[in-house]
Length: 78
Image (cartoon, rainbow, N blue to C red):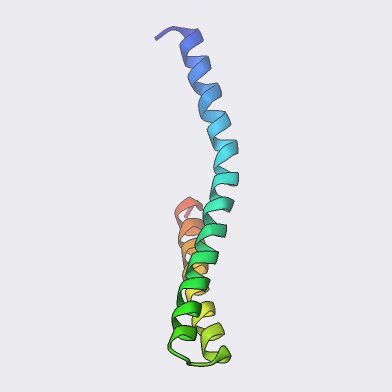
């Protein structure tokens, strides 16, 4: 591989690293909406009341926080 190709590859990887933060934020936003809205709508459909529906939605959001903790553990030097 030539030096120019290696520099171009490094530049592409560097730009992907900067993009990955925005991509992760977008994925977490979508996960938050889906994991809150899914259980919330299911609870409302079964007439469980607003408190139960919000509780179910917040339980779904707990999975997003578990994902963040796992991601942090994977990326931290131990």
